[in-house]
Amino acid sequence: MLRIAYYMPHDHQELAAGIEHALGVYRRAVGEGAEGLTQSWEDGESIRLNSEEWEIVRASLRPSPSRWFFEDVPESDPFFRQMSKTLTDRSVLLTGGGQSDDNGYLFWYQARLPSRAPSRTGVSLLQATFPTEYVEAHGPGHVRELAMEMASGLPLSSGHAGLALALHTARWHALPRLKEELARYPGVDVPGVAKHHSLGERVDGVHWLNFLGPSLLESLGGQASLRARLHSPGTTVQDVGTSGNAVVTLGAWPEAGDLSVGDNLPAYRELARVLEPWLEEFLPGHATVWIGYDSEPAYSEEEVRRWWRRFLD
Image (cartoon, rainbow, N blue to C red; front, side, top):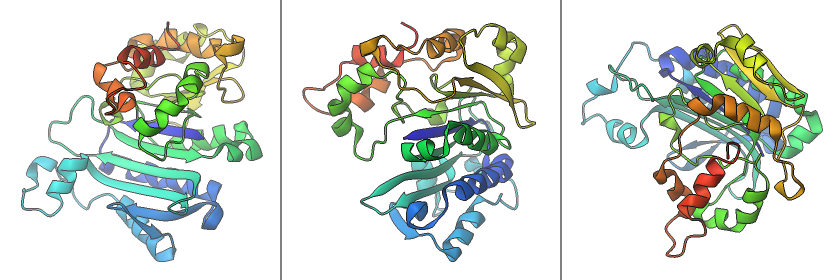
């Protein structure tokens, strides 16, 4: 599949309008009914998307009437336990297909908990996916424009779009079967390999499209400085919207690469070297997602670390 992710160091109060815009762009692109978005999810239960449910979705994205902070929520509040568990103010999860035949479309927004003393690393997260058939039918240029339009109203720290695994079962069941493929195709990402709600100003790897927020761009010396350090054919740097975001595009198409024939995605490696000081660091705990709980895990911690640094080493 092709996965888009945006990381935003803000509470929902500041994000509401931009998220509603992004959902509108995505909804118009993929459509509704059996071929597009079909259901909303709440507490693990699916609800069929109809006009009434869409209104509920829109209402859930409106900003609160007044500013509030999690520290002020009493433990007796019925939502206290849920917010403590999920660490989110609100979550909107929309998918396509049926419960047993996912069609590859997903829109998932998770707003961070508002705090009087917000964490420097806490972010709100928006994810959206497209099946590869959509990319092939409409072309990568169309998908790139969609990703840029979705991002145009969002105050980003970073974000990305590119090829990723579609993991619909527990990762520790699926990943062992894909060990050779993951080692062979460096351009295919593994979603959720870390807890990205605490990504902060770090960057979640290198992908086909790489969104950089104003703070990160400033640390890199601005667009002109970044552009001067990237020399691979097909790599471009350009503005996104009017909020100071930029996107680095690595070629016309999202690529998987293929190490068996020597295609190690040199443009991706070049950008990784430039972004290395800001890339999310590998921590031993990240390997747990891959290793799982088997007595004889398919991956060692060192193997996961090598994948994590596949564009650097």
